[in-house]
Length: 245
Figure 1 (cartoon, rainbow, N blue to C red):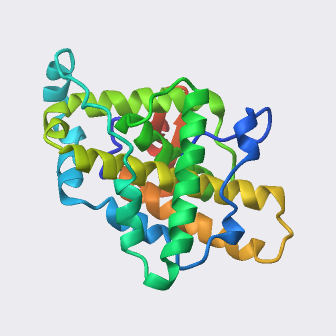
Figure 2: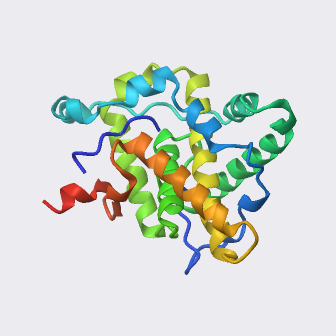
């Protein structure tokens, strides 16, 4: 875990023994190709977020000293600003479909986290959701429910250790970041659920290829390691390369 560097930035979804929210999702077959996750990824390259979340490991010793007194950033207010910014990056003829898909994904995300007793607007929750969804899409597996809250706690700890930088984010920046992360995680997770429910449907092979590519790209951008080296466990995310040492 120490060697993973969190750069910028799923929803913990499991169909086997899953809570009832797994029955509702954004149907990935119905999301137009133009409603691209690249739009969300581009939104998450916001310079300020990248600046404050990058190279945590390089300052690990200092962060540990500050951890006891560092405060978590305030909760983001879910005003719809982040979704509006995502929609604004789409071609005009795709804006309506994109808005509907993003809003639906965000609504499902908020239902999920309530079932885990987690607050809306928590950047640690948003980060964990994006990682979990990307892991699902890349590996084509449900995300174990029991690992989601530990992943959230790990993200919160990382944020607290860099709390001074995150405190400087404006309310609008926190909103845009949280909503984008939540939408990204839910849409990636829904791709895996859609495929698993009907792997022989028309377009299923294409969906599987797309979700693996998009999930892998997201994991690489967020964690700065190849996606096949990303492990998930009871303590959160870790590098499989480190685990073998």
